Image (cartoon, rainbow, N blue to C red; front, side, top):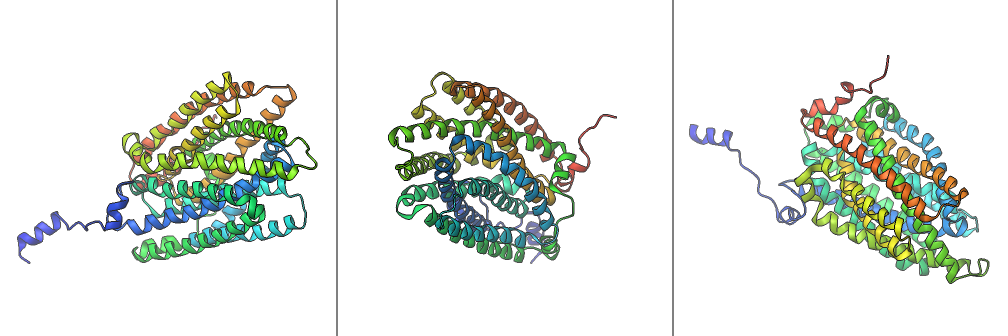
Length: 466
């Protein structure tokens, strides 16, 4: 090779062409050479996990609403938050002692084994609606949070902003097909048949996570491989959050988002229970009919908003990220909620509430969810796993607790659904304010070098008065 060829190679290195798979995936996100197989597998992992979750979510609604009712469902959220005060520190303790692949696979298999216990108790006639509701709430936020944390750990911020929209396609597709499968299988298979199918899917998720991690480390240099094998520091998730303004703002954002979403689900649940009681008036002899009616309604409802979310995720999220970034995408959800609950305030009818909640949830499970996951890209590994688990688990359920108090007070005072809609409008306005603060901080950290962004918490602690 002559000097000119050497200089040309140094200045203009060869660019590997994209494979056919990567060229196809580039229609949905900016997938570049060498990234196609891994991002597809991560998306498929989330597809399996969300499919399992929506099977369990349909079972949860059928059990809690027939064994307790809409009020008990709201009050049970307080129990979830109390339970997570124990679970989150325990998760952080485990994360400080094992590497990332053992953490993610071990926790997933633990929840899969729990389902065998619920199946045995349920078939023995134990009324487990409340306990299963609590369990699903912990499972949902913790297992999904750690898998997204795993994706955050694999990619840089620039890669994550490009690839997370496609990873989210797997999540949305799994949620939709899981809801469809649950709606069709709830009557012939029953709740415990769905639990069995979900447990098998969780075992597959754990195996796939281990394979992705092994393949990813084989492509890394020795230093990166050593970092992947290293457990996290001993700092707890709550400690990380309360010392970093950015993480605390994300926590506040999650609280407000969940208050608004829980409010809408409460209003919908009240209407569904009322309609089931009207269709099957005898609570003693028609309890099974009510359970099936509610299960079929929610299976269809979940299916509708998940297919709408899938369309948004597949064709719009990547383009939204390119246009306004994850920070700008945070405002889309509250704007939809603001318009929706304004309409409910005037006309609280079941068909209308169902449509508005489909719009709200489809945005929440696509645009809002992907933007929320991307917020952790410019943070440390400890924040990705521990702080993210605490935010997605405890703070999300803490929003449920706050709204459970609102439900208790509103029910005691005889609030109509329109009154709950009015409260939701106020919460949505606060949500917009917090989203603006998070977007500003994300933009600031995005301008920092990678190492500085990951340790920004050390330079921007919470200001305390003297």
